[in-house]
Length: 153
Image (cartoon, rainbow, N blue to C red; front, side):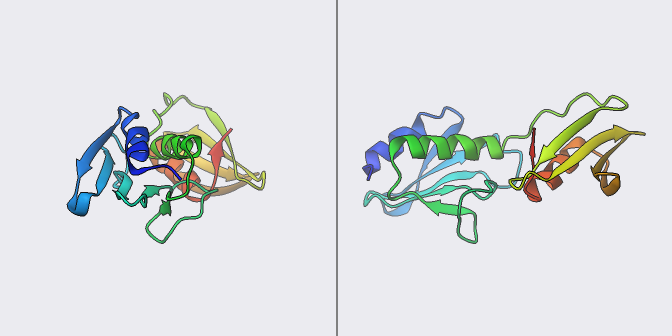
């Protein structure tokens, strides 16, 4: 188990995170660059070694109902990877320049695929030949695909 100081050091090594000291000696780390309402990546890191990290947008991490995972027994590399993935999951990907006929393939953990296409000033999600959804912006389509468990290939 990492000490409180080691956990603080790992979180602090990410320049995009801002440390905020809270009550009872606990520390939070905020990601102000988040593209979503969620900004709290490190939650209630406590001198007793307990603490939580946000993983609510990561499909392969078991979280509580608020999207946090207890990091009490995480090792250094495991914690670094979790923080990096969490930050990435909250970072809005720059939308590609809309160009008629632009196509992206998205895949879920079961290897099912959906296709995202830009046509007629709209973003369309297709499951094979069937229309699954239509969105006005790339960001809306991307968020929908991520929420459904898909990642861009």
